[in-house]
Length: 514
Image (tube, rainbow, N blue to C red):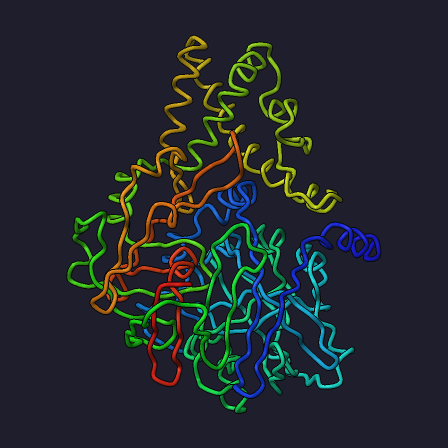
């Protein structure tokens, strides 16, 4: 069975493996890691939104997860737990062991541990679909064995610590502690195009008090300066997704001077920011100041609901799941009603019209089967997950209305009204792609300077032609005081503004990206 899965994995994911270009300048000790960029996949996102765990991810995480690092204060929110890595777009390659075993990782400034799947991961399908670390093949491996758990909004990984050399570009970081993941539950890591995470946050939030890779780069004198920087290429036509530069910055990556702000709380790269403007109008809540975290492991910009609601109103946004629900009703609503009137078993209807499979008792999504067996490497099964969930809701709603002797017209109108009331589980919204020219800019005040995002910069386009969907780059996330109100500035922001993480001076800098 292992051989079959392994062969299927090679066939399925060969075209998805990412091979970044690595540049180095030995004299300057600047190490450049080329990043590959994955296009946002509408099917994956919707599947994650309707996944039972992902559906609660952002807001529920605030209630469920507390910091598992060393900050100690109960009010401290574990921002790692708020992540939805399925949305992440930028990946690079590292090696672990001697000789190096290659892994595709997210370089994540919002966490601090390095983890990859372990060859000892036997019971999580996600492990079989990704590269796995084999300690027996490394001459520099040292056993540790200490247990490790990292909780995320969309699940958790668990495993144990090991020690080995880690290759990043031309650098070899010796005796690096990392986590061998033996359990990766949930859809997030199953369909992810990355193998693991390399955290670039502070040691204060490192699970198990492990020394982060970046700290060891500095401590082992492998870099010129205790600084690293991100340039994310937002040009969809360009093969190079960007670069993360260790030991300094590349002047070709930015224009003008950087605006620096001090890190206010070690753990995350957190700083104070000022007002958020829609056009030239204040949104009010952050006029007296808000906290912000710059996070390369998050795609969107998340902020307080009070401001996101104003943004959504200004750009005419509506819930992404609501639109998907309406699409199902438009395509299959009459068929569902006809099948209910024909006395078909309600639990079989969605499988009979092809949106679910049937397990003998109820319709179930087809995601895992599709991911394993789709040799073309497409993620069509994930759209099936989303459509299946929406279809089952529509069947229940229509069945209840038929019991009340409602007409077909009234039933369809009622179901559409319920679609409108469906919240977007991850807080995302969609907009009319034709309306970008009439949308306002949204600006952030950082270090007394205005950083403006245009509609073309904060709207993410998914798909092409008639099936294109435009997703707002803003998502709601309310973090209570004293940690909040809090913004998380993800790739939407970092793609427009070259970002410098100055570990030596404990500050973050932003300049217009070149």
